[in-house]
Structures are given as structure tokens and as C-alpha cells.
Length: 121
Length: 107
Image 1 (tube, rainbow over the protein chains, first blue to last red):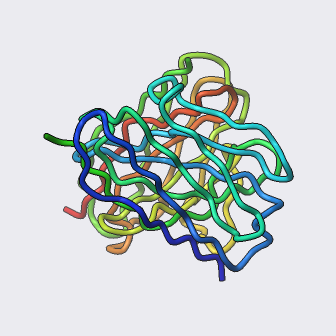
Image 2: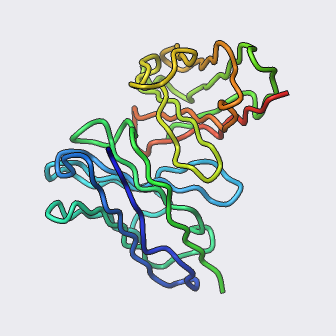
């Protein structure tokens, strides 16, 4: 059974940093592309960042480019999202997402329940 | 960037009704379009990929069609457990984008 469990969310002041982790199990993690998708309170889904499987590239939404960094440790079956220069508009539940495809994120076939990040002074 | 629109914003229908949601892309995305179901407090779930392919394990009352810029998602017979928000998502071009969502309720 595929499981994606996010951790690392919490409360942070504007300008601060936070690192999200996603522990994956139930599939060959290293093979598949992975993404982060967020949902701000009362809003819809927004794709944030993705990383290819098998040493593939990294991809970002314009809203986070230069501030967020996605990475993966295939030896630990873990996906990360390092977030810097956080803004109030980054407040959201962040979902870890597995892709059906290996090289480039595209079809999000399994989702974690999410980790809440709150940016406020 | 590709903009995705959905209609209606919300709908209320009776159990057993046929429900249709439309999704429009701001440019041709071929069939690179997926549909997701999201219930409050739960992880979103993939229902349809590549515009018309039913994900494994998803009930056959769900279906999708379309290509290019115009897409349709249908629930052939609405069930109480289908109460959720439904999103379309394009992956033709980065950044990937979702529609604003359609909230489905039981009348």
C-alpha cells in the first residue's frame, strides 16, 4: 500500500524558513517523479514544485521560484521541501504527491494528507 | 502560463442524478488533463487521467472526455459518497495548473 506521510509543518514568522519532509513507502520511491501541491485556507489546489525520478530535474511554480528547493533522498525514501523567505501567502496545507510517471511530474496518483504551514507575525 | 477554468463553481443534485462539470484550458493541451476528487480533511484522489482514462479502482460511474481546450467530467448516477470538490489539472506545460474546483453537494 502506498503511503505518503508529511511532517515539518508549523508556525513561522514572515521571512522565516521551514523544511517539510515526506516519508514514502509501498512503492519503489527512487523511480517515480514526486511533487508538492498546496491548498491555502478556503482556496483551491496549487502545484508548488516537482522533482523527476531517477535523477531527473526540478521544477517550480513562479510563486516559489528562488525561495523553495525540492530534493529527495532515495536511500531514505524521503522527499523534502526547503522553504525560505516565507510569506503570509505561503500559508497552506502542503501535500506530498507521488506521480504515475517516472521522469517528469504529470499525473498525481497518490497524495499524502498534508502538513499545515502557517506564516504569520 | 495555462489558465484552467471550471463550471459550475458549485452544484447541488439529487442521489441518482447525472452530474456534469466542464473544464476549459486557455490553450490547446491535447489530452493532458486529469480529474481529482477532494473530500475535506482527506487526501485528494485521482479519478481520471489523460482526459478519459479511469484510474484503477475508481467506480465506473465516473467518466471524462474531451481534448484540446474543452473537457467534461461526468458522474452518471450521483451517490452520497460523491460529495466533494472536483478539480481538473493540466500537465501539458509547466507550471502545472488546476482549475478552481467544483463543489458537489446532495440536494
